[in-house]
Image: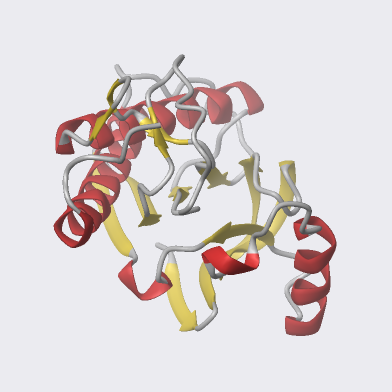
Length: 219
């Protein structure tokens, strides 16, 4: 289970102990060992063209004592997070997500607009099962698929068709190292991951839609 701490501008997902984390997060991407996955809330106005976000983020992480975490960035209000736990055949998957759709895109069709909102979908998933590298990659792909299905389910229209995500989504998946070799749709692990991520992202996307409406401006 993920324990959540709000310490605005930080949102902290405590994994309970050091785990293997797979992500493409801006801080410590790839396969890493970490006991926390964290969000840093930023304002849209902070992310101006030419802004050195990587150096700034490293300084912020060092100042807050978070250098050992896997770190993500979002302009979404971190208090709007969604936390969902699913258990299937004794396998638990927990998803913590923040969802902003201000720079939503449809896969394979960039809008090419000047971004005015860096709202993004940030997802942390903890799987209560020991997994091999290959199984972590498989579970990661299901988390991405569940994200996409959730965004499609809320029907956000873009000039290119229904949104399937945003241009700056980030996913981090954590599990213990072990011999579990399979995490696809036919497994309890895959079902649990899919349910948890779909529920968290659907809830967050519905909240964003209620605040902002059902259509993006033309590109």
